[in-house]
Image 1 (cartoon, rainbow, N blue to C red):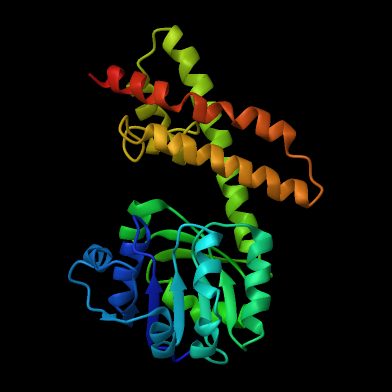
Image 2: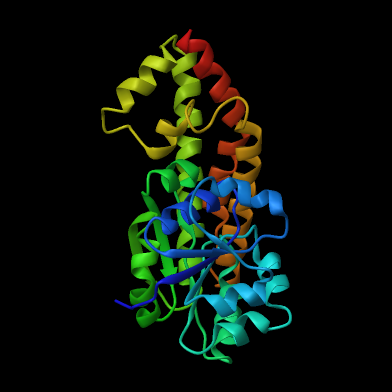
Length: 280
C-alpha cells in the first residue's frame, strides 16, 4: 500500500466520469480536459483543474487515463513531457481497452523515464462505475499494481492481476469475446422460443433466476435498449475484430469462435425489439 494521495484523471466519457467522481471521494483529484465543457461531467465532485497535461502530471502521484483508444495515448505521450513531469516511481494507469502490443510499448516507453505503467481496462460500463462495481483486468508490474490498488478500488470491486504488460488488455479482449459469444446463444435460443410462442419477457425473467441466466441476458432491455442497440452491436463487432487480431498475432486461430459470435451483434436489434413487444 502506498502513500499516494494526489490522483490525476483524463477522460470524462460515459464510463470515465463516474470513475473520476469515485476517486474524488477518497483522493485529491486533479484533472485536465481539452474542452471546458468536459468538466461538467464531474458534477459537484471536488477537483483541481490543470492547465495542460504536463501541468497535470507535475501535480500528481498517479495518473489515470480513460481515453477512447491507443491513438489518443500516442498523442498524449508524443512529446514525452507526461513522463518527465510525473517523475520516477510514479504510475500511469490506462483504463481504456486497446491493443496488448501497444500496452507493452507504452510500458517500455514509460520505463525509460522511471515511470511505471499499468494496462487496466475495465468491464461493467457506466452502471458498474456508478455502483463502484467495475472489474479491472490489470497487466504490469506487481508492485505498481499494489501501489495503485486502493485508487482502482474506488470504482472497482474486482481488481485482478493478469500478468505482465499487455495481459490486462488481452484478458479484456477475451472477456469481450466471451460476452459476445453468449449474446449469440441468447439470440439463437430466443428466436426459437419466439417461434414456439413462448413469452420472451417471461423467459428472460425466468432465466434470471435459473441456470440459463447470464450478464448479457440481464442487460437486454435495461442497459441495451432499442435506442442504443445498433451502437452496441457495432462496438461488439469492433471488439471481435480486435480479439481476432490479437489471437492471430499470437498464432492462435480464432476462426471457430469468430464465426459463431459474429451473428450475435447481427441479431441484437431484432432481439431487443421482440423483447419489448413481449413485455407489453
